[in-house]
Amino acid sequence: MTEKIDINVLIENMAENISSHCGTQGYKNPLMIGIQRGGVWIAARLHQKLKLADPLGELNIAFYRDDFSKIGIHPEVKPSKLSINLDDRHIILVDDVLHTGRTIRAAMNEIFDYGRPASISLAILVERSGRELPIHPDIIGKTITLKEGEHAKLSGPEPLALEIMKSG
Image 1 (cartoon, rainbow, N blue to C red):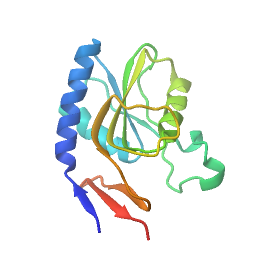
Image 2 (image 1 turned 60 degrees about the horizontal axis):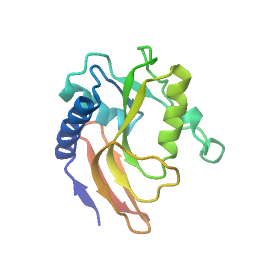
Image 3 (image 1 turned 90 degrees about the vertical axis):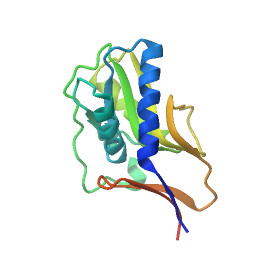
Image 4 (image 1 turned 30 degrees about the vertical axis):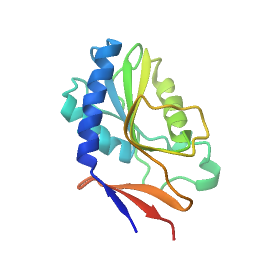
């Protein structure tokens, strides 16, 4: 059994919330960075809707993960793409599913290797239970609670689809 979630509605709401968040915080020209793969797919849509001036950044956190020795390297590791100086920039970091918080921690480690941003705001398509680190998103498309043995899976980039699936 799977539950399908309307990604387009979530992305539209996220774009509105990001715009409001940036306005409230006084961020004039934020830099958006997506975490490969799913985060980049979501970030590309948000970047287009928000008409951001700077190019979309992409992070590949494969070498920054703390479970690197357990899971190995994904065979299709692509390099990060950050063509803009990050120093003193307001960054909107985008990912698809926030679960334990370890992916976001790894992404922040990599960001700080590129420079020292003024701030990092976290935008997540789906927030789920099971956090292991004190990571809290600023913008959330949808919060879900999964049962034992369930997981959220984003496929794409065209079409984007998010399904809640039972393992096995």
